[in-house]
Image (cartoon, rainbow, N blue to C red; front, side, top):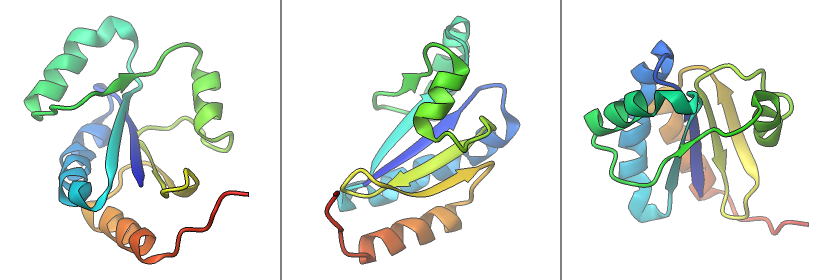
Length: 125
């Protein structure tokens, strides 16, 4: 299972939810959850991104959006407006089972993940 979070250093709701995103990632890591963080910042903001991640003790590989915004947005979900933060949960088969634009709480993430862990894995067509 993968929890994808797209955030940016300039995005206040992103910064507010970030501790909960990390907390849920750590809480479910041993149950197979992989947390993937993607910064929506421009690459000119790399120093700010590094400072932000270091301040939250992020000790795993993270990513920065590359290329055209609309191509990136459509690659995640063509229905996504591009608003940040954006969070998606994918099952073990790679299917997106939840998507949310805007700040999401630890309790909501916990509910998503517990529901996904309880659901049987349906093979991809």
